[in-house]
Amino acid sequence: MDVIPVRARQVSVHIHADRRLAFQVLTAFGAGGQNQANSKVLQRDEDRLLVEFHTPGISLTGRRRVYRTVEWVTTQEPAAIFFEGVEGPLSMLHDRFDLEEEGGCTRLTYRSEFGLSGWILGWLVARLVVRRMLHRTMVEHMAELKATIEERAKRSRMFPQKPCNLLDSAS
Image (cartoon, rainbow, N blue to C red; front, side):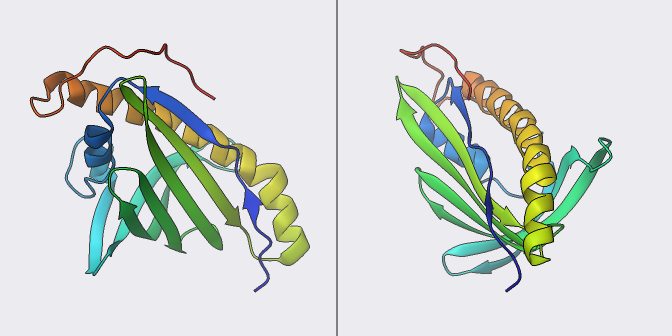
């Protein structure tokens, strides 16, 4: 394979919601709503789903655009969600969301390893350009997810929103 992996910068947010509710919202693929409207389950395979995503992001020219990806999604309820890219602009994509209980709420952390074909040239573009674009996109996306999950927690009867023992932080 002519892809050299690049590790994306980790992005974390503290969410004022129960971890189980956050997990439910994050895995409601194709269910509609603010963030899930851009996903569609294409196939179910024993312990994973093949999901098509349409994700807003930033192009190489700095303009907004929507990226289409198809990814295998595997879950470990309620602690982790794994994504393995099958189709999309990146030759290799392995994403992960970790959900940890934190002060009575949830710490959501995004980690990614990705790559472009083209060996050293692909690695250079991925490292110097795509890594920065991916980070900016994920900071925005994590803020949207935080808002969506917290709004849902305000209305939840099963997992009502409770005060957290920690202040908001992002990294």
